[in-house]
Image 1 (cartoon, helix red, strand yellow):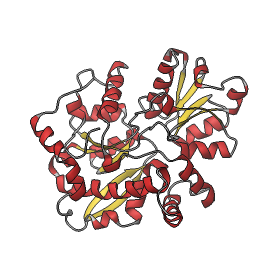
Image 2 (cartoon, rainbow, N blue to C red):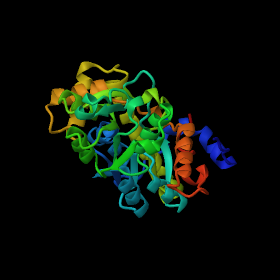
Image 3 (cartoon, helix red, strand yellow):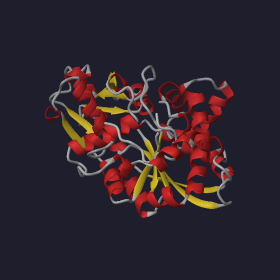
Length: 341
């Protein structure tokens, strides 16, 4: 499905690339901003921008607010408890957009053919019993955080590609990432799909078995998006551009160090040490670094938004009855800030 942009969105979208390069003047000094984050490698640019002072250089006084899942982050942004977030689209986020409370303003993590991406895992017990590939997921349990989460959508894409009715897969919503990790490790659930940085740690600890890659079933999946309140998107353009500029600088550092591997060894170490403060901090540094280098997924340059992917996700939410059928792309996406790809 596609949708046409109105004249204002088209004109503003044409200047998005140049806006990201310059973003005009920085926001006023010490503009206080709360950024929602989750302790995952996909949120590394949030930590890099914070630790390297990119937010400060953009005129923002940032506080990081930690969440366990996408939906509570969306609620926090709608209520004003957080200003910006980077996470997967959820039914809650879409419903809040229908109420004119939040807007998606950019894209972040993306599945890309040839990059490891999210890994499909089976519990050791399920694997030993024959769950050795995604085509065998029928009749098994699959862990998710909440209904409508990215994990739910990945299960749908995997099932659809393998002609498995979703009714044959038992979804187990466990609310928090740690709870899903624990359930898979102890064979309370049979399968899960998770970013490689988490999956690689579980594989190294022999807590699960790899049975596939999500990129084989959703190669252009826009896994996470950048979003803010509708009020910020409409009325705080300078502040929002400053946030996107700082975050985009950190995305470049992240991709160079972990995805494209064009950074020097010293730079990789420095960026990995920043991430290690927030992600896998209970693991030895060298193990955490290995997981980052070998398992990080691409984040779109300049936070470009894959409109086809996010529109597909919106239509899936509607088809599943998780959001109202009258919600349009225009209600959800503000395409005036970044390039659309």
